[in-house]
Amino acid sequence: PSLITMPAPNAAQAALLRRLTSSCSRSRLPAAKRPLALRPRVLCPANFVACGQRGASTGSSGSAEAAASSQEDERAKAVVLSKRLPEDFIENTLLPHLESQLLDNIHVYSPAELCQISRAYSKQVVRQYALCKKLSDTVKFRIDGFEAIDIIDILGPMWIMMPDDDELFEVLEKRIYLKMEDFTALNFMGIIRIYNKRSSKHHELLSKVLPKLRGLLANYEGVELSEMLVSMAQSAEAAADMDILMTLVPEIERRYGEVSLVHSINNVWALTQLKMVHQGLLKRVAEDLSNTTRTKDLTPGYMARIAWVYRRCNAWDLVADSMGPLIWSTAAEFRCGDFARLAQALPEERQLLGRIADLLRMGLQEMGRKDFLLYLLGCVHGECLEKRPEGGQEPGEATASLLGYIREEQDNFKRDEVQKIVYLLHFSPKYNYLVDELPASWNATKEETLDFIRAKGASS
Image (tube, rainbow, N blue to C red; front, side, top):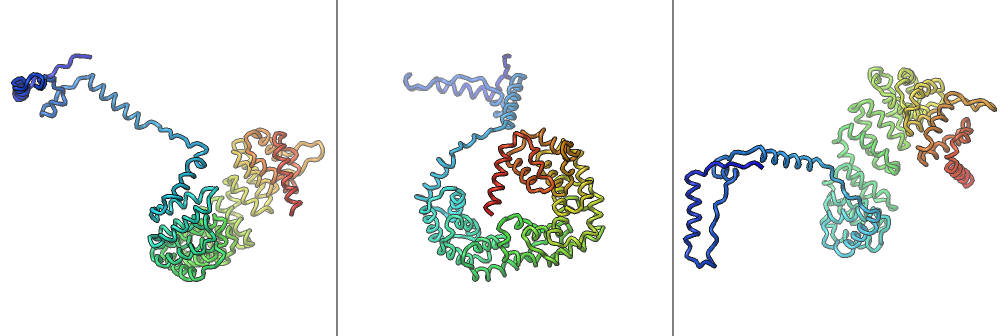
């Protein structure tokens, strides 16, 4: 390294150094106890900055600082790989820890902490009844400290762990009455859904909660109400929540004019998913669909959804005249999923479905497995494939292209996907012969699936 030349100290600094050295050398202490004389040290640039003077920096120190800063930048951008949890983490670490806490420590837990450990323990496959009972008793004892959010957090886990503890749910119900003003509309929906699962109907609770829910829903926007309904339609248990639906749907109908056509379509689709036919909403949506201004931007996905909804509700005649030309004009824009839904809804429209199938087949080689399965579903339901060839004849172009794709990609299909294909073809009267044309590598899964179908049919 090059020699660093430092500027000479000024008069004040030189005097300070002389005083320090002379005071140590004049000390009258014995030599053994006399402190070592301070040696004058070379002042670095940082010292001069502290004294009000800036030292001259060199190229080597600048490069060292630049290298250090670049290393810090690289360290900040580096990818930190977290250590993966071992496979037995839940069994050997998490579950013993939760059981230990439930056994020894929950008596000092706050309500929020009781909610947390309840959620964690309710998700375990193996639970000890004694610990669940202790947790339930602790919640009863500490119920006076529970706020509205704590009640909402603990209702679900306690229903999973202690569904038959009538005393617990009565205690929670009384606490709900005291905190009635602190709940939101979504909170009330959750409360109703939990208590509706119990064998005994809580009529008093419903008589107090439903009017509050109705009043709170009036403060929501129409779009938010639509999102609530669509969200409920995704749940397998929502069909049993008629108390909520009887409160929510009238409010949605009253606010119909506040939402777009797309949200209205989603509303009738959600009700159809819940196996409810709402004639009033179906007619109002049908009137809007007859307006060309409102339907000019509809996508093929929504067209297929409309066809599916009105066919399931036996109301296709309400929209057939307006939707038929729209679907024909956008046939080239249909994707595999839209095609599959349309084929299920309108299987009698062979000419339309055949046109869409021919357009989609041009991109068959670029399809992923999911798109292929949807395309195959549409072709089978819409009967877009050729009839079974006579003895010795080659299959038609559409059938041959599908079989070619299956043979080429046979090693990439998952087991459940193979089962779906076997199910689809087996239950199709016109194309069940194609089961025998499936690749030989699928034979084990195919035979297993067919045996299951035969066993299920025999048992029924």
